[in-house]
Length: 210
Ligand SMILES: C[S@@+](CC[C@H](N)C(=O)[O-])C[C@H]1O[C@@H](n2cnc3c(N)ncnc32)[C@H](O)[C@@H]1O
Image 1 (cartoon, protein in one colour):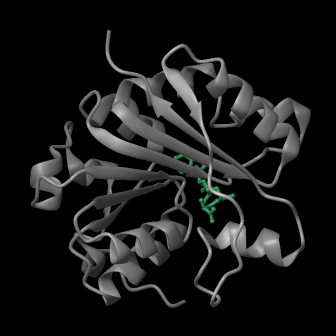
Image 2: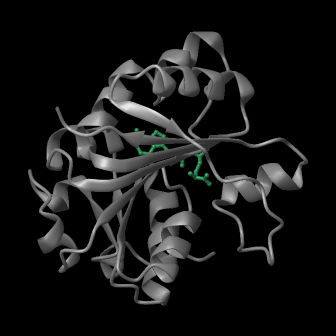
């Protein structure tokens, strides 16, 4: 897909510096609708499809790779979706510094980079600290969705989330046959399923505040 220059992609694509030091959802989206995050959104298929299918929910994709983020934003721009946006930059900064506690309805983390080499495992986004951040930002009753094709990494994700005192494990959706090539949760799901790989799906619910 061809991307358009960064400037003309505003407000669909913005970088962290554009946002300032605090993200007010109502100002950012121009509505008070619930917000869901697509952390590491890649080319943004989930953000795009979810924003298209759920006009009363706001979707924000976070993507550290600007090129991928701009691709995602180009999709949103073409449809002029008012409820889909991408922020380019380190998602961890957005989660820990810019957004209010318990202000998101759901966090989606699909196919997080596995960093295959053992010495690189520390770069993986899912660790104890990250799950604590998720517990901080997701509202009580809200959800965390995470899928992966990497069994060993998914086991770690599930262990962290299942054992987290502030999350409750829920039943994740099961695999279904796509109706067309866009009918996948994400581009990575499409890629991995076409290779015949199994997909591991996790869903957890934020417990009520004490
Ligand atoms: C394997 S891809 C999956 C993309 C997409 N979720 C999908 O399923 O098609 C992982 C994505 O996470 C992004 N990523 C990794 N670390 C990140 C971070 N700290 N903040 C934002 N994005 C990140 C990568 O650049 C990459 O696009």
